[in-house]
Amino acid sequence: MSFTKLSVSVLAVAALSATAAAAQTRTNIQIAGSSTVLPYANIVAEAFGAETDFETPVVEGGGSSTGRRLLCEGVGEGTIDIANSSSLMRDSERETCAANGVTPIEIRFGYDGIVFASDINGPGFAFTPADWYMALAAEIPMDGEMVANPNMSWSDVNPDLPDQPINAFIPGTNHGTREVFEENVILAGCEETGAFEAMTGMGMDEDAAEEACLAIRTDGASVDIEGDYTQTLANLDSTPTGIGVFGLSFYENNTDRLQVATMSGVEPSTETIASGEYPVSRPLQFYVKAEHIGVIPGLQEYVEFFLSDEIAGPGGPLAEYGLVALPEAELDEVQATAAGL
Image 1: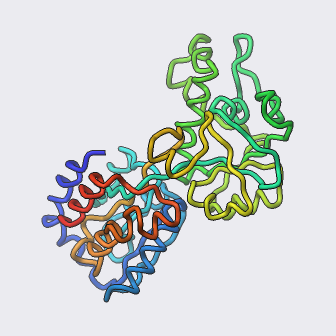
Image 2: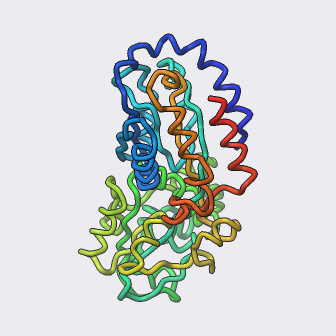
C-alpha cells in the first residue's frame, strides 16, 4: 500500500474540519468493525485510557464491512471515528464516504494469517485451496456441465484427508476475513483444480465463472458465522468434526482446545506469515475519519499511541497477542503519517 495517497487525503482535513463541529460534544473515541482487529484495539484502548489523560475509547465489533459502513455514514457526534478492518476498503465504499463528506485515512498496523483449525482431539488436516473449493463449492463442473457438489466427506474431496463429514464454519459476509478467504482460498482452489478453465470452456465469461467459483453450498455442509471467533469456537465445541476458519492470533490463544491445519504444506505461524511463505495472510488496518481529527479529543493521540514502537512493535503487547508486526521501515513510514494527521 502506498502511504503517499494517505498524505494527500490528509490535506483535506483543515478545509473540512468545520463540518465536524457537531462532534465536539462527544469526549470519547468510538470504534467499530473487524472481529480480527477487535482484541488488538481493546488492548490499545485499555492502555490508552490508563496511560494518558484521555477517556478510554469505546471499541465494538460487528465485522469489517459493518465498521466501514458506519464510518461512511457521515460526520458528527452520532457517527464513529475509526473503523477496524481486516480487508481493504472497496472503491464503492470510498464513493459512499465521499458522498457523505467523510475522508477515510487508511492506517496499516500489522499482518495476520487465516488459519483452519479443528478439535485438538480429532485427526490432523493438511489442506490445499483446491480441497476447500471442492468441499464448499455449490456446484462444480463435471462432464461439460455444472452439477451440485456431491462431496460429503473430506475423503471424498481428497483421499489423503480424514474420512470425516464436511462441517465447515466460515466467516459471514460481514467479515473482512470472508473476503480474504474467498479470494486466497476458494477462488485460488477453483483455479488450482482447473474448474475455472472448465467453466470458461463451457461458455461462461470470466466474471460469471468467478461468481460460480465463489458460490458456497447451502446444504448445511458450510455454515456462515456472523459473530466473532468465539462463536466459531462454540460451534466446534458442539460439532467436534467441524473445521473453523480463524485468525492466527485467536488460534494461538486457544491452542489448548484447537489444532491447526497446514495449507499447501506450510504451517501458519508469525514467522511463516512474516516471510510470506504461508499463503493465506492479509494486512490489518483501521480507517480514521479525517473530519474528526482535532475535534474528538484524543483521536490523533490514539492513532500515534497505537502505532508506537512500544505498542505495535515486535516486542509490544500486540505482538505478544499474535500480531505479525510491520517491518521496521514500514512501521516508521506509518508512524510518520500518523504524526502528520
